[in-house]
Image 1: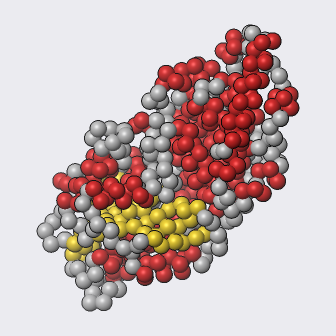
Image 2: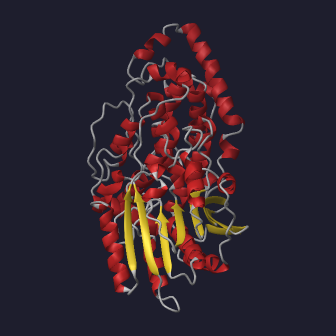
Image 3: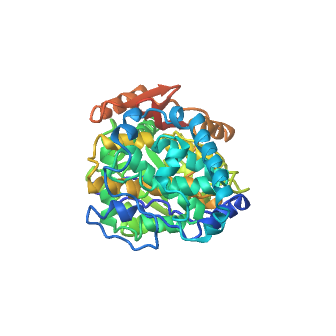
Length: 516
């Protein structure tokens, strides 16, 4: 879930690219990778055919069913997971192991009667299993359940269990649908990620999901739609802006450093608020940091953001200055930030810091280095908005389960707003969510850029860097509650120790906090 979504008059920043999977434990998966060597899987082929989308030709032997009425019945795929019910109860307990065990028994029985089965693994996938899928289901006695099958497939990949992986993927490709129920739609992208992991082909799947970067106006449409239908981003922006406004109250010169400014839409409401401050507006300077790769999504470099914000500030008679810093967040040093004496400094990390590699990726540990650098600047406030998810250092299988649990709630929240057959909804999920999901599942090392951490871990990092909590004010809490009145009643806002959490039903999804 990328951070910088669009107001109607601002262009959005581009999502991080999805790179190829390079396993840190390549030897463990060498056999399974050789089996699936040329297997590709593209959700576009099924999802877009019915919606008059361009269909991209891929040498794929797997195709997602384009029908909303896939073999998974409505009762099987949705009724027991309504509105964010945890997947762990039905998927992570004994069922996947039981399924895997039965598949192992079946594999042994088949090998006794067909010793040549392993020789057939070099053939194109699938089509070399001796038994038809229906016979497999009858012999295992396992009900056809999408959740159980996805979890069992991930575990089989973890265990290098070739026969189980092959059979499960053959089954799963007929059970998922990008125009189906939330679990079917999420399952399509989870399956995409699993196959990408098998093939070490994260970059290829990235191209399949987004064969050509959409033009700026299209990406604006996708991101703006997600911005409007879900409150996650508005929650983050409004809460961060509230903390900054509170911290710089009475200051005449305010310098905001935004570590991923993208199109700059977060600062529209803050400029408007500070322009009407009693006693007159302060002089505002914004340093906008953004990777040069994102320029195409704005239609140009950071100067475009500066021009738009300057025009807005001028309309409100607010003294304004913009400093663009076209550099990767991980490479930022103090000399890039144009710090001047007498400025009240505010630093903003809105759904960005999880992209910065930590000690699990590099000995340089840029994540903690940046926090220490920011602390040395003695800022008035540092705002942090992040997803409440643990996908950073977790091993593959628990990371898959975590992503499954997290995005189940996200997809269900979208489902109450956008129709399932909507071409726009397919675009939103594909362009704004799917690449994140595939990256979490398929990639390792430096290629895995989606590295979320829970608030507790972020709290430890900020504390070790010398920060102290700066509790969000009750006014911020009240503003967010007012915002949520415009959305589904299943969204939940919770305050714990000065930290705000926004969730879907009982699942926290995003948190916002401040430090000084």
